[in-house]
Length: 198
Ligand SMILES: [Zn+2]
Image 1: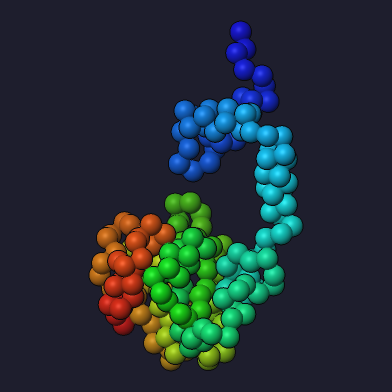
Image 2: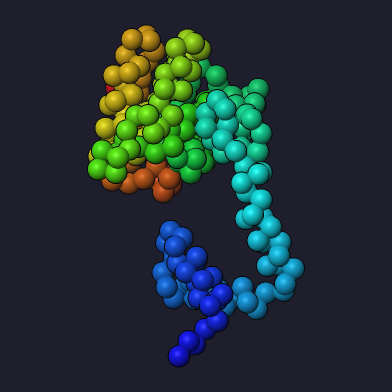
């Protein structure tokens, strides 16, 4: 006997496919939605449906943006000689909260041979192109302190070696295996202060 209508089962499945959501939470969220006003559900679904059209990637740094250039790349108040390389937009937000004032480059992930993610799957060539223009004095490699993050930093360093730019890596403070995304802003700020030549 089917206890729940098919559409509700599907809704639960969608929630459960999201990161950090288990079956119980997926059920609770679904039943919560069923009790909200129809206008809430309609606005919510319009928002999700419009993401495709409303959100794009910044042409310079590959941060998520609503225009060709993101707010950070467009801002006149940033230090344009320092570039921080991160794996994901969420890492950028964490770094931003730590008080960093330079520019960014979002790779879109980390090298992972096991998952078939190679240099061409990330925005590495675009990074080389940006650096080759000679506008930056320092490149801070803020990929995660994981096996993949370290391998990615090492690969980028070898690619950037000939451009005469200072390359640094975040200092101690970030626990091995911890994601930049989840580091608290003070730890991350200390890690930036303690960055070392790489
Ligand atoms: Zn940007």
